[in-house]
Figure 1 (cartoon, chains in turn green, orange):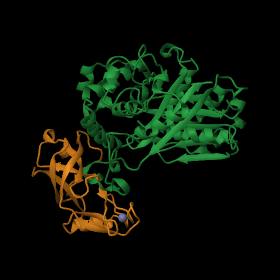
Figure 2 (cartoon, helix red, strand yellow; figure 1 turned 45 degrees about the vertical axis):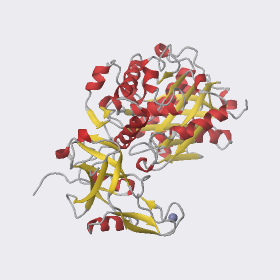
Figure 3 (tube, protein in one colour; figure 1 turned 60 degrees about the vertical axis):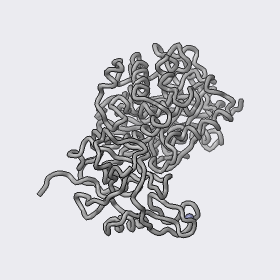
Figure 4 (spheres, chains in turn red, green; figure 1 turned 135 degrees about the vertical axis):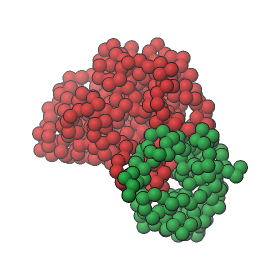
Length: 378
Length: 140
Ligand SMILES: [Zn+2]
C-alpha cells in the first residue's frame, strides 16, 4: 500500500439515448463535471484529461476550457476506439502515480447513433490505408472484420450461434433493472435467432447498441483520495496488447486477450476465480466469448455453456456485465464499463448490486487489440 | 446515366500504387522481399521481416478460404444489388499466413465454407478505372 497508489474517485455521465440533440462537447463536459462533483474534488485540482476518438468525441483542451480550467498539464487525445480504454485509464494512473498530475479525467463522448455511426458510409467514397483492399468489396466496417474473426473462432473452438445468443440474452437480462440502459426488455433465444442478419455470423442482437452519450472517470492518488467523498476504487494493474489491422492477424482463434491476460494474472497474483464480477467490452457477443475464454473465466470453447448454466449471472460464478454492457446499456465505447465497475465496487449499484463485490476485471477491445485491468475496493 | 452510387474506390498510396497498377494490367501480384523472400500483404515500403527491398511478384491465384462473412447489410453504397453476398479472407497457397479480402463468386453464399479452395479472378471495378481480385470457388 503506497500513498501514490492510483484510485478512481469519481464517476460521471450524461444521459444515454438514441438521439441526444446535443454536441459531443456538451455531453463530455457534463460527464466530466459530474465525475468531479461525485468525487467532491475542487475543479481546479484537475490537471489532466485523456480522451479517445474514432469519428466524433471532444478534444481534451476544449473540454478543459468548457469546464472553466485555464489549461492542462496533461492533455491526451488518442485517435483510437474502444480498444484503448483500459490503456487510457492506465495512462491516467501513471500520470498521478508519477506525480506529474494531481487528478486526471478519462472520458469518451459520442453521438454514435444520431451522429457519426461507426462502420456506416454514404456517398461515393475513396478508401486508402488498410481498408483500400477490402472496401471495393464492401468490406470495411468493424462489424465485418469481427464477424470474420467470429466465423474462424467458431470453426476452431466449436462456438455456435446459440452460444452467441446466450450472451445476448443474459446481457439483456442484466440491463433490466438498470435505469440508464437503453434496451431493457428481455429477449428469448427464439427472438435472438429471429433477429435480422447484419453480417452473418452476426445478427442484430450480436451487435452493440449504438447510443449517444458521454461517460467519465476521475483518477487521483490514495493520498489525495483521503479528503474526498467516495470510497476509492484502486486500479491494481493493467495490461494491453495491440496488433494492427484485424485482417493481418494470423490466428483469429485467439484474440488480444490471449496475450494480455497471462501477464495481468501473473503480476497481480490474482486468478479468474477471484473476480466477483467482470465488465467485458462487448462490441459484439463474440467479443465476450473470446475474451472470457482467454482470461480463463471458462475454458476455450466453453463460454456458451458458462452462460447457459448461469455462471455468468447472479448466483453463478462471475456476473458478467451487470449493467447490460454495450449490447444493452449502450455503446459508450467501453467507458461505461468503468462507471459500472466503480459503482459496483462502492456497493452503489442498487437493484443490480453484485453482493459484496470487491474485485473486478474490466476489459477493452476485441480482435487484435485491447487490454484488461483489475479494480479493487480500497 | 446511372444514378446508382458507385462502390468505394481504392485510394492507392505510394506503397500500394504498383499493386493496383498491376491489377489493371491483368496480373494479381503482391509484394515479396528480394532479400528474405517472404511474401507481404498489405503493401508496405520495405520488408517487415528484414527491412529488405520489396518487389511485386505474381501469385498463382490459388488459395484457401481462411474465414468468410455474408453481408446482409451493405456497409457502403454500391452493393445493394448483390445482397446477400459472401466476402472471404483468402490464404494464398504461396503465403498461407496472409489474408487477402475479396468477394466469393460462382457459388451460393450458403455453400461457402472455411477451407474451401478458390481461384482468383480479376474483374472490372464499377465506377472507375480500377480492377479488383475476386475469388471463384474451385477447383478443389
Ligand atoms: Zn525480407
